[in-house]
Image (cartoon, rainbow, N blue to C red; front, side, top):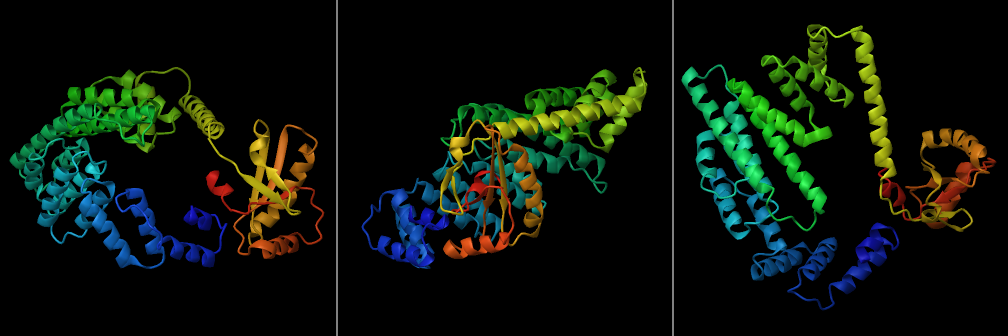
Length: 420
């Protein structure tokens, strides 16, 4: 609470430090992780880092399965001086924290270390010694094997591509099984379901890419089709590229053209997709001129972008606070819910803000008599505080005769709540 008050500028830095010095002298439960974390933060803020480290280490030693112990283990892993030391540390970490939410991140770092040393086969042998390997780890290694270069012999390239395919099969299996794992507490049920769905879609897209490289077109198209279905409207641009290329190779021109249309409408096309689109339009002997057809797709894409933006804005869950007028009167923004609210943020040191105020004032004059429209020109992020801030604002306006309602966000938190 003390830290939050300081962050919101409710208390001064001096008062904040005085409060912290009082806090670190109070009794607390050394077996309660929240208490330990709070005390550790207070100590670090006061530059008592050694005491904070000792406190955390003591708790982690007594509670080896705790979140704090896990964080310390990861911090120590990052200090490993060799790949072997890191690899051994990862093995111990996975034994101590088998359900860690950082599991995927740890495996990714492990595989990356081996790939940087071009020790692909060692990495392949190593991950086979672990249980429940994340799909992304298999996929990262598979992509490395699939990156065949011209210096390889034909036999070596064939072996590496075979390993890539085997690894991608393991990746897909792991991704499908991962959907059955327990949901972490910080995920909402629907969010967790979508997260797992998109993760599987991503792995299937990579599998399709690897299968394309190996020339297994039918299998590639099957993986890419499933990936595209799972992604829905969230399909990534690379997936459209690969799907269209594979469909054309399989003489599925109608499906390729439909996918190109979809990519353009969803604003996920690139030059390659646009070129394919023009080629397919001619190949399928579509009626009418191509330019008009293409422009109609671009128009639909623009409409969809605006609709998506509008939906996102309408569905924003924002907890608005109060602002204060220049005379000290509180204006409760939450009470204006249901009305059209125009909020103009500005600072006295901002040149463009000053230039925009006349236009905002003119706009206000058009709607000031409407009961359904609310204007608030809100001062934020000033260098001064208290009366000095108020004096700066009054000097900023000088003798101007703006009718625009002027307010101050004393905590400077409103813009953050609105994503400014």
